[in-house]
Image (cartoon, rainbow, N blue to C red; front, side, top):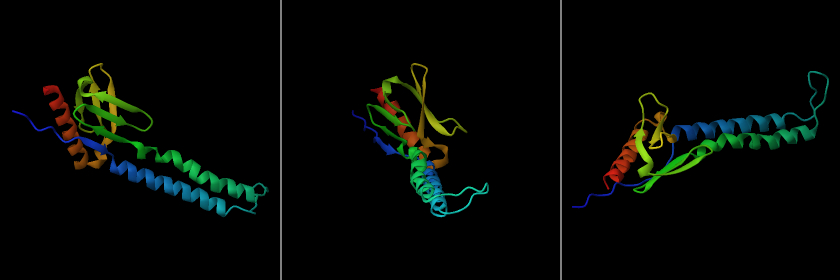
Length: 152
């Protein structure tokens, strides 16, 4: 008798964190660019003067300062019968299911974790409590994949 293989979890990303990152990055960029546009030829409180180059520098800095705020857009998780690929803000982890002791989503915790057999913990920023029912469904699928890999 063969059992059906659970559906893989592909490119699961957090919604709330992505929306917040986009809104904040756009606001930061907008404020800095608008400040740069309104800056040229004004006098400062200390009697100094701003120049057109100051304005252009601020306009160029707006997008540059907003770029790091978009790092949360990279966060995702992919899982299949072989293992799980976790991409957090700046680090990536490829973990086979044989190395995972448990998939945890503790009550009150902001995100899920993978407890490894080496007593290490991998945070899964893609599955966040802010996403509510959607996050619970992702955890159920991860646990099902883990459980089926242990049975095989």
